[in-house]
Amino acid sequence: MYWRNLIRLIIFIALFISGISAYSYEKADAFIVEALSGHYKVLSPVKVGDKISLIVVNQTLHKLRGKLQENTSTDIAYLSISPGKSESIEFRFDKASKYYFVPLSPAFQEVELKIGEKSYEVPAQR
Image (cartoon, rainbow, N blue to C red; front, side):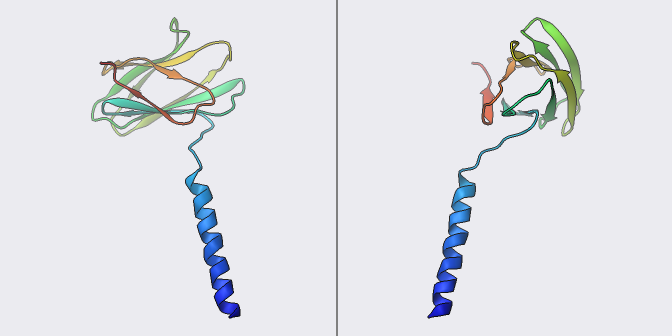
């Protein structure tokens, strides 16, 4: 009888722990922009200091060229990433500004980098 109750308790604890992990969400310490065919996936940090990193992962079959912009007018950096590769840059982050990753080739709409969001996707504009 004791062993039966112990096994039930172990099963209950295992199910409880797996249920908690099912409600967890993705988060990062940097902006992670993943280029996929037809859309972009962004994983944003919850908190930001003075400096932050942008990691761009190219999951397409084409070379990706893009730039990091502040307030759609100031270019911070240009990136060129081969298929299946990634590249990162660190930049000074100002909370009063908006930041965008702008894919140049292949052309795509600008991807806004939002603080505190869970992972979000940016579909192609129709």
